[in-house]
Every structure is written in structure tokens, then in C-alpha cells.
Image 1 (cartoon, rainbow, N blue to C red):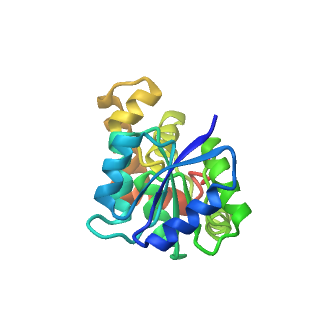
Image 2: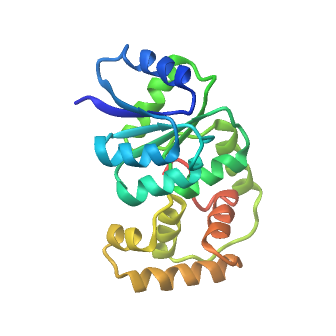
Length: 211
């Protein structure tokens, strides 16, 4: 089965270049293009792609908001960020928003294809430098968080950008129970909200990027 890809970038020449690259592969079908966030959301509804190859810098709706909108309307659609940015803060933002991968535009052709394949195989693709940073933080940390197994599961799904409702559906528990788990997680990590909990969990290695 061919992977249906929607290409999103505000530069037409960039979109055309990516299209030509992906057309080299028999197992990939480019089903459409979009030049801004609002158009992207509409194209996802219309075309039902398997994967959205998404730039972060776009007019009318930024990339992070676009990720969240896509996940709201089509949670099974995979999102792979293709951007010029390399800062770890951008990586954490896309992780929290729900994207499955983050690669830079200077990536080699075969690496782009490999990243698409990995994301479609339910893997998460992020820069090695970020994975190394998380691993080092975990290795150097002496702080112990007494999270239950269920709380660890909820935290892991939070790091994937899931809402309480989606977590409840995934774990076959009530939304109220999820809220209780989230509350306990925030207390144990000594943080004020979900975003801080995810950042802390990534830094301390409580959640692995490959999950």
C-alpha cells in the first residue's frame, strides 16, 4: 500500500522540489500540497493523507497550531516536521503538539525517505542531539519520581500530545480517572501544568523519544 503524503510549505518551489523527490518512490503518493496552516487543515479533511510533511513557518496559522488542529480532526494522521530550525525548544514544541518526527531541510534524500518510513512504522524520529541530551539528563539525575505504572503510561501519552479524552480511549479508562492521574503526576513532578510535566519528563528521561 502506498503512503499518501500531503506536502506543506509556504514556498511553491520547495513544495515542487519535495514532490519530485518523493515521486521517485513507488510506495509514496503525493496527494496534495498546501501553502499555509488553514489550507493544510482543510486539505487533511478533504484528502485524508496518511502523512503530512509540514514546515513550521507558515502564514495564517503557525506550524504548532496546525499540528494540534490536524490531530484534533485526524488523530491517526502522522506528522513529520521538515524545517530549517534546529533548536531543541522547537523539537519539544512539536513533541508536545503531537508530531511524530522532526527533521531539517538539509536532510539527504535517502534520509528523508527513511524518516517517512519510520514514522509510518509508528516510530518517532527526532534529532540525535536531542535524544543524547535526554539520555545524559537521565544518566546524571539522582532525583527519583515515585510514579505508578499507570501514571508513567499517562505521562508517556501526554508527551505524545494526547488529550485527556484520547488518553482515556487509549488506556480504556474514564476521562475522570485520567484527570486524577494527571493531577498526581503534576504534584509528584512539582510542576504547574501539563507542558511543564512533559518538558521535565523529557529532560529527566522519564519519557523516551522513541516511544
